[in-house]
Image (cartoon, rainbow, N blue to C red; front, top):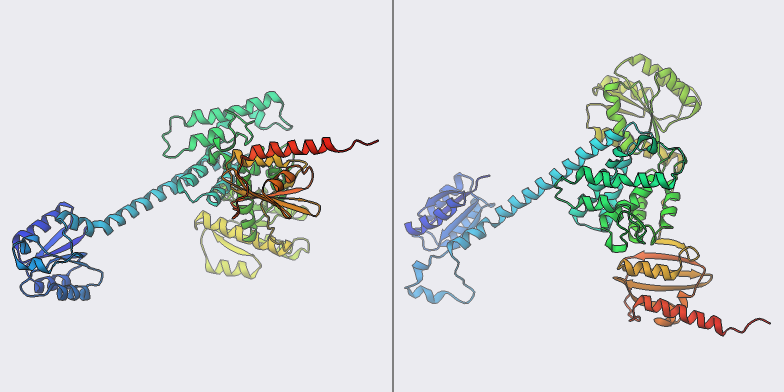
Length: 568
């Protein structure tokens, strides 16, 4: 938008100097020789800023400034004094230490600052929209690629949404969040280069098959190596199968050597995989999957990322999110809209059932009820209403949630449908995201009504010392440069060790503190542990290298065992 400025000065030289600078910046400039002329201009046209030279023949500058602001409150008014007006006059004496000299270009830079900030803000907003558009396009293309896959349909979309939420839980950096989301969508595109028979394998992979499957990472990288991404997407794709303990592939990186984005995608990829069914196994429920993944914290996965995933899933449950994969039946939905709504539902994590006819849909409902039936009323309208009545009159299916789909929001049709018992009326011409969101609301409401679940609140990463001893936990936190509190419980005894950026800071066990508490805890072979990331200690009782403390603790434990009297 072009900015309008007014320059008010009795001196033609001052007027032209200031006006010339403003025009060079692309602004429209109106010149005035008196305060009265300036008031008329500001009162009649939109003006963004006024520069008033202090020596005017008809107005005191302060009075003119107040009048101009009164006429147009959004207008900025700046009063300046030309050095030529005072350099050889007694008036110099009235200037004090809190008065300053600015060159004309500096004055103009100050006036332009808010507009420059607005332009930069607009540029940032445009860049944000461009990132969102790119992600959406890639999401749609990958979703279409996976749509008819019984096991992988919606897989990448689900992973992208979850990975982005976990990244936002860990960092506020928008670049990292974008990198993680895009990499989560593109990470497995290389599977198009893997033999179809391997992807549809019905049993566990052999060593040879596992090596063949690993090639999908290199294939993904080859597909995108010539794409000049403005974000670090390729390193995430390359390393999302690395393990935190260094036993992964392709480069055997460990700990913080693995990019944070790859550590996030690794955890999310595993969670989405185990909560999806395969030919050789059923799907784990989210709680089972979390238990499985938490058991690998510190070995396969970054414990901090596992904890962030737990927090994200807890928030979703608190907001009424579903844990299981709900089934949605598409009844009488025609081909032109079927694929679109199916893609949206699959991406939402739904299992989609597609009976051939309304008669087949009725028979399926008597055997196994889905969470929702979506019925299209654009064709065979009376047949669809008959189908609805059969559902409502049968005691087996009378509580079945049903929503109608229609091409237009016909008010009379909608009223009839609601009177005859549909749970919602959806319009195909609405934004697909809105349609799917309304389906999500129906499913959430029904799940809450049926199950009455309560939210699970976790406290960090938990496990048993028999599976992961304290010395291994310490090594994990040191390698990862983590800040965390480890709480260990065995019977009635409980102790804690605090770490900050991988260094041991404080330990306490009852009345013991510092190294004495640390050495005692390292010797525990049974009990439970909890790792809470981001928790700091106010005390600082440990000053040695934590790995040295572990070795010293184990040495003292061995000495204590050696000193025990042998049994007769």
